Image (cartoon, rainbow, N blue to C red):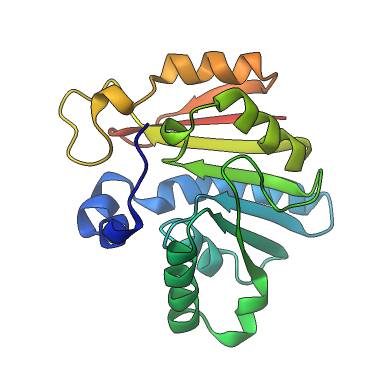
Length: 204
């Protein structure tokens, strides 16, 4: 099973990756969901699981800095969380740091309370998970009822991949939809955002 090596962290924020996966496109969709929750009152919690060095998390923090939104950054790697926290200190003013809480997680355990997250993002992680069913049950545990799950990963159908894992380590869009259905996620919809990656949005 392919696992990303934290020593290659500079690739995560490379210009090439920004060209392939402009984070703003997915953040636009996350913002729509967050706005719907905000309209119902109260704070909104967004968890970026497998946040790495902050490819999605940092622009989300800047986008949502004036909104009642709390971001949870989770990763299995102490090294990646250290890099992320360095970026947070350098790029975000101190008054906004309270809006991000970073946690080290285990592969099949997220250190978050039951039903505590409105929106969960899992980007370029799912192909690394061996027991995908168990992993999805942990995601469901932390999501609130009717919580929103964004799953982004490299397309297996990409015949000429320039980044990401080998084709043999990837999971097809159809396979992931089937796994989500078996885990009882509902309202599963594809979002045509990127040519190199698929994005699925679903509800708990």
